Image 1: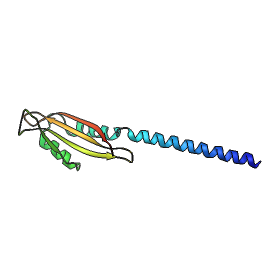
Image 2: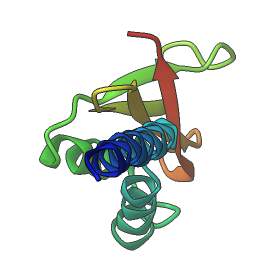
Image 3: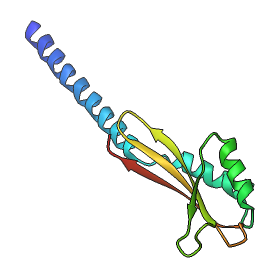
Image 4: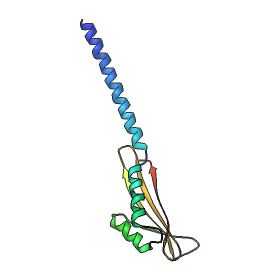
Length: 124
């Protein structure tokens, strides 16, 4: 009788260990995925608050209002003229470190013509 109880305990231990390992692997795989909800939230906010044709100053204020630092970019063909702006939003967890990039492109009059949101990872 005690032999059967010991076998059940041994099998129960290995079963619980396997279930725990499967849960840990699933969590690790989920951690590697891009933060889709955050990206979609930024895309919705940009579509609602910054329609095409919005002036560059408004975009800069929008970025600053969210606590991010805007980075200006000059296009090679237009030296001295800001034709792009971006912001980096740090986003990391215990397994992956990365950033959400917000990119904005302007025409020669400083009006928004394109925006994009993307996810980039880098090694720890």
